[in-house]
Length: 358
DNA sequence: AAAACATACAACCGCACCCGT
DNA sequence: TACGGGTGCGGTTGTATGTTT
View 1 (cartoon, chains in turn brown, purple, yellow):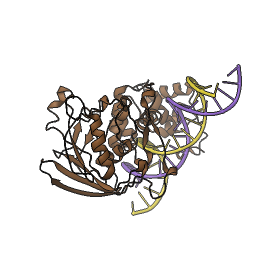
View 2 (tube, chains in turn cyan, brown, purple):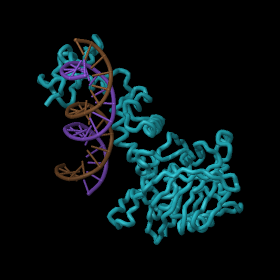
View 3 (spheres, rainbow, N blue to C red):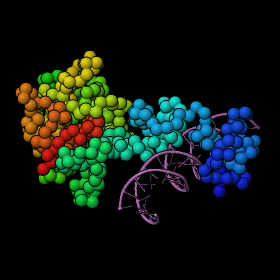
């Protein structure tokens, strides 16, 4: 069956031969394409106009840039895709000489897998949802091949009962109040999330805290924080933010404040002082962010986790890159708690970390 | 060496939109 | 307003090539 536009014609399909290419190039070079449906007849081709157009646009056009994508192009694709989604033609406009088809193929064959291996959902660019949690290799020090992803995707659905299946139900509940430290607390959602792995069980709400009300980018760590509404009212799911990342460091900064108790712990961080000079001014005032959650998980995170990260200068340094394997943070908790706060992290660098998941 | 499998990319298909009649 | 042709777009399929078993 041919295309609608040429269903009455006897047309050739499949790969183009060099002779056909030559005919098409010659015709368009001399006469332009004009009306595509008339091109095959004028060029002496047994093809439909649609096929000619596609061949010209995607392959024969002289201004096409052939060859593999550069890192810069890849970054551009990811950044624009985060904003536009699968609008390949729009994305391709940001890449001179590239076609929508080329971008789409590159995305599907390469970028998509790369994002998944980094624990990111290629559709939303957020961390993968809890039931798709990418489990960090229990002993990453054994993973010496830098080309291999540090995550593998495990679908836990079958091992979970209906009651404990971790399907977050987000109910936007935006409110703002301040504590004595002038830290603005935004309660983003109430999240009925039940988690019974590792004998942990919590059902609480999460908060996002920042000292300023703007979307803030934690430059040196590629972690992102926002005090803007982060829930899409129609889908009730977190909104992804159009932020690009360039660093592959994971640097939480320094903990400067904590408050609350076992049921509502807040942890505030000061940006790492190791961030590049050029960002010092841009990121003022010092960003303070937190993960806030409840029950045992908070306790575990707040006490054991931070203590284990204490370094020699007496401060609780959260530079994840310095972990030596003694840290006992519950990765699942981290994701569950941080993702609803719309924190984005380039987890590709997590191969620097050594976790003791036991 | 050959079969099976995986990957990349070219091409196709169906649909939606625009525009002229 | 309805209709039809032309075009563009995104999803999907097909195929050549590379890799593994």
